[in-house]
Image 1 (cartoon, rainbow, N blue to C red):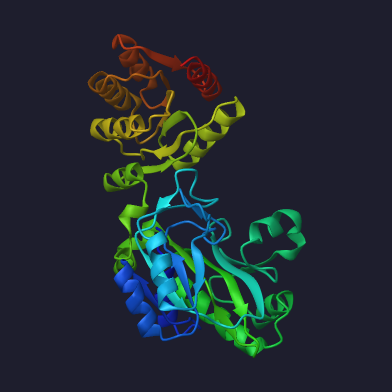
Image 2: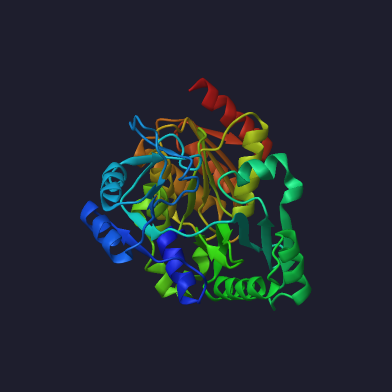
Amino acid sequence: MNIHEYQAKALLRAEGLPILKGEVAFSVNEAESAWDKLNAPLVAVKAQIHAGGRGAGHFLHDKNAKGGVRLCRSKQEVKENAESMLGKTLITKQTGKNGRNVQRIYIEEGGDIERELYFSLLLDRQSASIIVIASASGGIDIEEVAQTNPQLIHKTKISSSGYSPYQARKIAFALNLPNLKNFSLLLQKLIHVFQRLDASLLEINPLVVQPDGQLLIMDAKMTFDDNALFRQPEVEKLRDEQEEEPAEREANEVGLNYIKLDGSIACMVNGAGLAMATMDIVQNFGGSPANFLDVGGGADKERVETAFRIILKDKVVKAILVNIFGGIMRCDVIAQGIVAAAGKLKLHVPLIVRLQGTNFEQGKQILANSELNIITAETLADAAQKAVNAAKEK
């Protein structure tokens, strides 16, 4: 689950971390009131969407091509920029060509900047640890730095029990920070809030060094583990459903794991690992996945039908590949669900099905007896090839 910058900063401020004063605004009047409350000579007006690259982005149909982060030195400038942002579509590298509609903005007082650094915490599930990623070259060009000068990106693994003093020194030296005590305290607090709130990502870009050597969190992005939200009710309240893909939201409500992608071959699979393998082999045969969809190990007819309905809402889908390995889930039950859903929804795109595992022979017989136009496959490679071919012919 993602949250907005102003929400992330509120969480970090509550932890005692260095955050500038700011006010969220949902209207132009609220933006003007924010200027009055902050009473600062310089403020930043920031569009609030669940995507990065706002400063380097642009608004749709904006002739001035200004980005989603702007500096203002008067109440009138705040008003004008609020009017040009609120309700408008912001396009960044991370939003895709359709962009995101800006429903709220964040008005934040300005701060003195001597250097901009990059700092983030990531959850590494494989090693059950936290990875610190840091660079002395922060700011809006960090992606380019990672590609052209990867040696400037430093990674440090932190165990679940906490970090060692030498690790704090190592990161501080990589960032050329003379005040080790300040950085060590900041690192300690960031790790604490990361673990306490079950975060999977905490990104600060930029982490600013001020002229007096003090550190300041100028921007913040936080992502949380969906599976841990049951013990984070206060975090779950921060969810902004308007920022979520409608199909993803619908899938989440019925217990399906669905992520929309940009391809044309929809995938319906049971198990996250098998779903990833299915997407990879579709790509290997020259196709492009339209989604990640894990129906889980206990899917029934109703869940299969819902999965098909969500898939068919994506108008760019040209073929559907169903890849089921029957373990806990029986292939004959899934086959019944596929036949029922295909008949009820009147599929208008080719359907390729590969069944293996418990009762797969009965499942294939159910598909064969259905008299529906279902293409069956024996192996995953066979299924992927047939899906790619069907999508090209569509």
